[in-house]
Length: 149
Image (cartoon, rainbow, N blue to C red; front, side, top):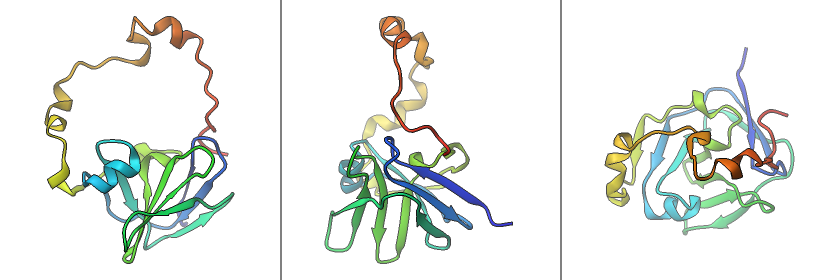
């Protein structure tokens, strides 16, 4: 039976399904991916061997270079795709279950932020262990679209 993975943006306006095997998952540290994701790297997984179907609205697209378009939700701005001549990759965090998609390679390492080498030695805290923000967090109500329809 063919595996179907679902996902979408944080507001739920754009949703997708990927049927079939995912390709190689990666993180990209290049400056273009950093800017596209507003982060220090972009976690992506290739879907070029699978079938990607937009089940709600399609993403808007920004032509980030002469060869690449970046898909994003036009309502909430969530980064969704990297679309290049060799195929499409989807943002791992946009999947309803990203924990099962583990990157196996890093690209664009010339742009890697040096402090990334130390991320695993920083102290770890759960959300509610942030004592200074805990009263604020106790009252937090998420308006994000839930994982899974």
